[in-house]
Length: 406
Image (cartoon, rainbow, N blue to C red):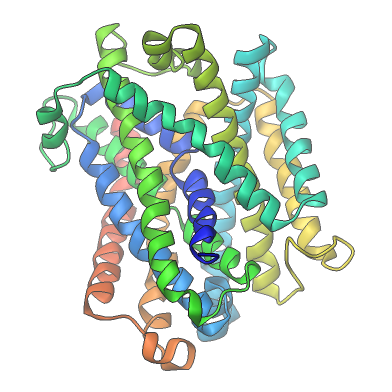
């Protein structure tokens, strides 16, 4: 029972991967522009990330290494340096977007421009990381993240054409604007299969001191946690397709358009629920990404690390998330549009997949790390498919950004 209670790690990872500003914005944009047509991209992304998260947890539980540790140790620091730099850069952009999302939520609640909230949001995140523990962040974000279930309730209350919703789970050619359709598909996949997500999960497993006895629970945690996030993301798309479409909004250019999704269903409380969902999801993701930046650098250079340690015991680790948070807040404080940054960074995230997923094929088949718990045929097939998908996304991202980016 204690192990199954660790599902909060799956939920908090899911909040960072599915319920943050990237997934909410891309799902809402996709629903407004293409109705239910892009549900398949969320479903595909969810299935892929379930496999990767399960592998990351299994690797950590058996080898007592994080994915970052494994890549550096198995391939050497020089080979590790390129994925490290790519992921750090993209994570920085995503972190900035998450701070912007939380700042937008503060603007919706107070009427004060989001630019003024960027540094306070970063400071609050830093304070929680500086003073808190991994368990506090893990359990707190997972519990507060349940507010996003309001999108599922809203989707059911809207009574959409469920037959059309089901059709949306199968890939189809776009009815119009193909460049934008495929760009949105790439952005959704980038928001779903984020490298920081499975890397964070492996670090969280080490923080929670997992061992081989957690292997069964890991499968449940990965499956339920990621499915939770994927379900919310599909619900956001459905609500956007029905509500924004009915109000003639076929292009989401401003976060101020998004509360309309729940206001149309719940009235004033819809505004409150949307603001709370956006704030919690983005703030939780900001905590997760800032931690992941610190995990990446500390593990990459062999420093002492751990959110459960005092900052004086892991000064380099604490310095990384401190500097990263405040630097990431600066572009938002200077007026950078969080929505445009979000869509762009999600597409780049998709393009970076090969750098971080290719090592899975080697690490999860290396007897020195996982022994008898190495990948089976299904898991290896999944990794090869994700690698192939990642290479396709890497090739098409820039042209789609030029011709289909909004």
